[in-house]
Length: 321
Ligand SMILES: [Zn+2]
Image (cartoon, rainbow, N blue to C red; front, side):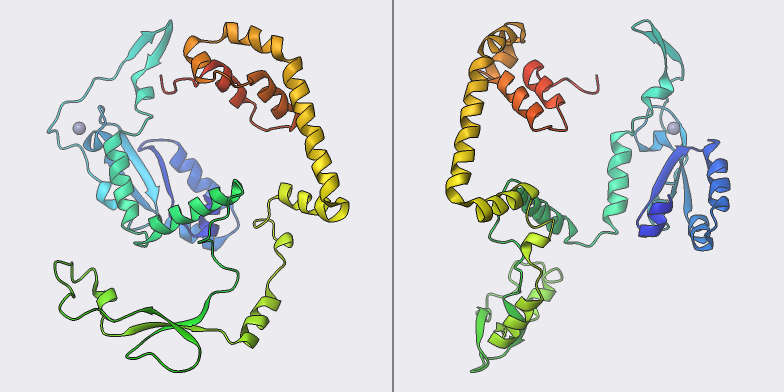
């Protein structure tokens, strides 16, 4: 909660309406010697609703303590227009189970409505920006740099809309005016207002002068000193390449390849034994893949999530059942 305050982000805390947590939380907040935090906390809005109005089977009285102007539309009490499942306990697989436990999962309808509430407050192009950045991050992690990666120095010093192409300084026409008669036809005028504002202008990108460009370049940090630009493994390789040379690096790689092949051979019988114990469908899907070697190499590299080997050998477990 305190971190939400420090970061000034949307927040929402959910608990049953009559939960003891609300009282405890208030005490905890008052104990923290930070008046701004306390003011922030007491400006949060309590949104109370019956879960049955949002797709749940039970009329569970629920409260969200959340940022103002966020989840208020959800605050509806049961209007009695539907029937409820009855509360109870059931014995399944030898143990007692309370129906309330099922209700710990948010109903789909509630989730959809909460998402709608949040989306209303997000910048319109955030999603697009996020998936683009996500794609770039993923590509970078796998070592494939994308050509659309943000450039170290922007290509243009400025981009302007002008009635005609100027003779100087050096520039590039990025977009020509719209041919007359084609504009706005069948388009949502309001939505495209921003685009058509400049319909009769040229979009011009002005280059930096050589001096400006050099000045900006001097201010750049060396890529090797930025953690997020050069992955550690690559940095080590660059270091080895610079200190030992290409021949030594090639020898290292060949030696490692030989080590891998030798390990694969050593594990051959293990592999056959493992294959005999594996479920048929997993055996089929992973046919031809040396799973013992895979496990061995991951252990060698101290891979943090060794569970991936179990999944490769036993198949992915069903979750939620
Ligand atoms: Zn109801």
